[in-house]
Image 1 (cartoon, rainbow, N blue to C red):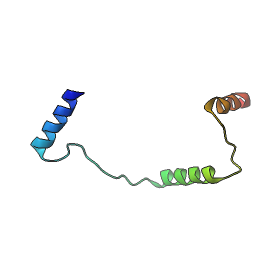
Image 2 (cartoon, one colour; image 1 turned 30 degrees about the vertical axis):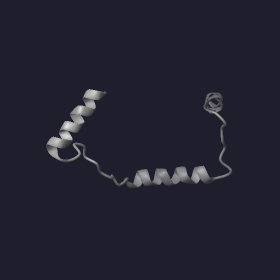
Image 3 (cartoon, rainbow, N blue to C red; image 1 turned 180 degrees about the vertical axis):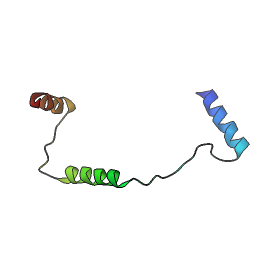
Image 4 (cartoon, helix red, strand yellow; image 1 turned 90 degrees about the vertical axis):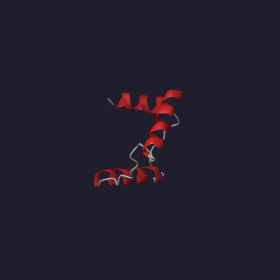
Length: 64
């Protein structure tokens, strides 16, 4: 881990900038729609909830 940090630090000094591209990607319409749907589901008090993953998995397996 130390050698990785040293390589990073030397690159920063040599290039005088962060060597990684940092960008904020704007989501496409499909992703925006999926996020909005997740928000609706999360805020709907009628949506079935599970206390743990095994309960969810059990129900899914019983449906098949």
